[in-house]
Amino acid sequence: MCGIVGILGRGPVAEQLVESLKRLEYRGYDSAGVATLEGDHLERRRAEGKLKNLEARLSGDPLSGHTGIGHTRWATHGKPTESNAHPHATDNVAIVHNGIIENFRELRAELEQNGASFASETDTEVVAHLVESHLKNGYSPQDAVKASLPRLRGAFALAFLFKGHNDLMIGARKGSPLAIGHGDGEMYLGSDAIALAPFTDTITYLEDGDWVVLTRTIGVIYDSNGAVAHRETLKSGASSFLVDRANYRHFMAKEIHEQTEVVGQTLARYVDMTAKRIALPFELPFDFNDIGRISITACGTASYAGHVAKYWFERLARMPVEIDVASELRYREAPLRKGDLAIVISQSGETADTLAALRYAKAQGLHTVSVVNVPTSTIARESETVLPTLAGPEIGVASTKAFTCQLMVMAALAIAAGKERGELSDIDEMKFVGELIEVPRLIAAALAIEPQIEKLALDIAKSSAVLYLGRGTSFPLALEGALKLKEISYIHAEGYAAGELKHGPIALIDESMPVVVIAPYDRVFEKTVSNMQEVAARGGNIILMTDATGASEATVDSLATIVLPDMASTFTPMVYAIPVQLLAYHTAVVMGTDVDQPRNLAKSVTVE
Ligand code: M6R
Image 1 (spheres, protein in one colour):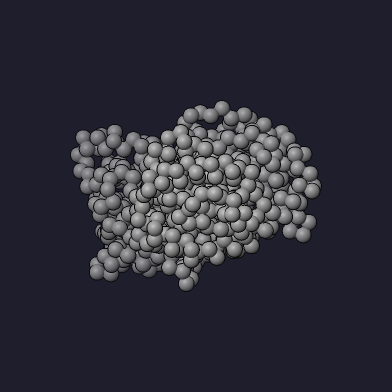
Image 2 (tube, rainbow, N blue to C red; image 1 turned 60 degrees about the vertical axis):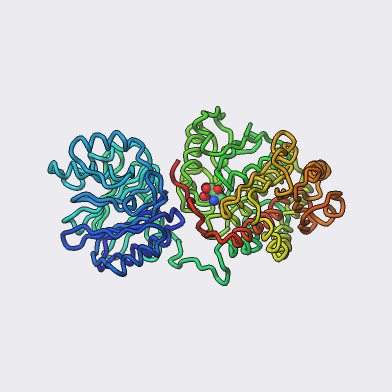
């Protein structure tokens, strides 16, 4: 992944580079670095760990150059040490890179044979040496980059800085996003418009295979064939303000609490509240009656939103749905049928696997709909139809409000499909939309159980493993609960379909095992109660998340019963997500982990 930025400025740029990197930390935070041209020299400052370490390094040993590049890293090749931190440099070139150079081993061997000496374990450094080898053969910087790019296999966004060329920066993109920012006598490169928002809102996105030669006054874009390319310049709309935590201890806490509002905003965009009808923000360029099968693809939490939606599409629209994690769809060469529908779901809109799945589906001739939170993202730009979630910027690495907003969009789409296919009548549509309209209020009511969850987290934090169980739409929520807990508290957790318990995982249960059972009082409640009995009989500690009826009907002793508001059963995941998220959050707080930036993770995963 990683975030990259480059500035051709009118004054010293180091501070601006760091300011921009702060906005890119969601892409990785293992190490960071900047390089500037100091007179005729390339100078670097790099530091392991979070950006504050780089800031400290810079304040002790400042840089004053007016031309510079910066990087925040999510390690792929090589440990997160200072020597592996970007920028990587040779005598005449410094580079920052986001992505993976897949053929770096063979390139490195070739370059070493020709005398290059490597200072890091990264794949990136080969690019610097490759360009350097051409510079040493008398190529201009532009020709050296042009000759090097076709040799690189994999995904990359690159920014190059050249010794002795104070008014030059070169950028290139293949697979990973890169944007040009146009300033007044200044030019910028950045992984996204958000990184550049403090300096400019005038943005040109490079397309795949493009590379750009920038000076302070002009940017000339070339396509992969070397022809000059004209790309649209847009006003980005990204805010120049860094989102703050308000009075919350963590972004994750703030984002959990924002759900009443943002789910409500998303709802308002997809339904006509007065008429209680679905009103999608855009007309879909297909008829659901012509769609034989829906293929939903996403990663992580977004894939669990898709998994929940599969139940909705099957039940409300009687449509066959396949759900895949994006990293699997493409390589198993799934046979997709031309004219069918592919839906990809992504908060960031930049997840490499999801983007690859979208392109795979497009290449097979499917209609493509993306449900994204960042409307300027690559996935949004490359989809036939974009259905936005209105969650606002999600900063915590653990996805919370994006998930419930994704569910809201998918619920509206499933109802629209059911209606168009004649599976739902007008009355049905009004009933289901009525249920959706209730959701923000129910989320607010669910948030009120936070003090109980906070106490419960003290017990969970003592555990070394936790099981989550659910049936129907509560099954993907069990998967989501387990993901949420493990990614921020580092406690091992697994989610299972409650009925699967007896087929293996039940062997894990003993007195030390908390088992979170997500069981609204619905048509499968009694079945889930039987599974709870099986857990109780083996001494497991049950934490039951249910409603008042479920709490009174459950005949099993539990360590705790979390009673959620009564609601109709179809859309319960949007409300039951709240205790699931709060439990993970408070457990992580008790464990003292870095809740918003947990170890080894990044907010936007732009490598395969
Ligand atoms: O930006 P995306 O929604 O495409 O990201 C997908 C996953 O990387 C993401 O949901 C991840 O699993 C979260 N850290 C989960 O909380």
